[in-house]
Image (cartoon, rainbow, N blue to C red):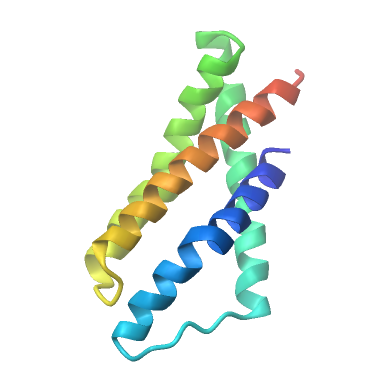
Amino acid sequence: MAGVVVNILWYATWALLARRMVSDALQAVGHPLVESAGGSVIMIVLGFLIGIVAIWLYAAIRPRFGPGPRTAAMAGVAAGLFLGVFADIGWGSTLRLIPATVWATDAITTLVIVVIATIVGAWLYKE
């Protein structure tokens, strides 16, 4: 379920915010945004994998911190940092075609999305 939430929120974020920011940034350097079905499939698979990892992490820390939304949020922050924020920092520092504000926006929205998805997934989690 967490993967479904990640994918829904990622798509909404892409449609409402990120597509325009990325497109404008790439257009400014003469590279139009090119979207593909293959790229969409990869993002969907990654969304499910992130959801799986986040709930796996929740299950791993639950015996120590107890069940509930606080533990889920902790797992979501850890997963979001490792799977989203740190990746954006790496890409942003090496791929300079896209401004840092775009990378920062993506990092923050990804972190929020993963935390929300982990809380929803943990709510449905049963041992």
